[in-house]
Structure formats: structure tokens, C-alpha cells
Image (tube, rainbow, N blue to C red):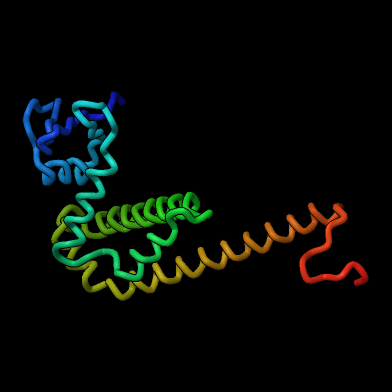
Length: 180
């Protein structure tokens, strides 16, 4: 696979698609995302990578209009993770869970094609999902509960391993007297 499609952002806030040799809009960039096209947005003057900034602008526009994906409490929780020791873990966790969700969606789409054939297009899929939303929510809640339980178990195991590893050192935990 070649290098990603290059889009240059000029000081006048215009975006120039070097592959199409034309100026494009944020709607066009969103369409590149939806079509799965690899691209990079760079500052035309400095060469700085602005891809994340442009993607965040698209998310902001999507969240501002229509039905938002993120509730206010979720956005507050995400903000609280910035600067937190778990910031990197949180980003990785979200990325892996979104990937798992996409894989589940792809499997369901393939299975529905096997059962209903080609006539089960995007419109039928949307109608099916609107009816199945409560079932899907239950499945996702179960998945999240299982993930949480696995994470807690992993954390407990790490604490046990850390205690065992440091038990050889002459160290008195806080709140314990040396006489105990």
C-alpha cells in the first residue's frame, strides 16, 4: 500500500487535496473517512501533521448537530483522563473496544447477508438495528461488564505479583508498626 492521500491546509483555512488537485471541504474529508481512505492533513507552510485536529473538528461538528454519540458525563470523564497516569491506557482501551465493536458489526452484516442475501442493504440494516437496539445494548452492556471484571482480576493479579516481588525487601508498609 502506498503513502496516504495528502491534503494540505492553507492559512486561509482551505483544504487542498493534492491527489484530486482541488480544494475540498470538511464534508469531503468526512467522506474520505467514511470510505476508508487513508489520508494525512498537513499544514501547507510548516508541514505539521494536522490530521488529528481535522478529525476532532469533524467529531465536534457531528456532536453539535443531530444526535450526539457522547453524553456530557462521558465527555467529562474523558477530559479527566488527560494528564492522568492512565491516559495512555485509556486511549488504547477505547481504540481496542471500538475495533472489537466494528468487528462485531462486520460479522453481523456478513451473517445477515448470508441469511437474507443482497437485498439486505443499508436501509434494511438500519431498520433492523432500530428494532434490535435494546438487544444490542444488552449485548454491549454484558461485554462491558465482562471487560470490567477481567480488568479488575488483572489488577488484583498485578497487585499480588507486586507484593510478592517486594516482599524480599525490608520494607514496612504505611500504618504498620515494626513491632507487628
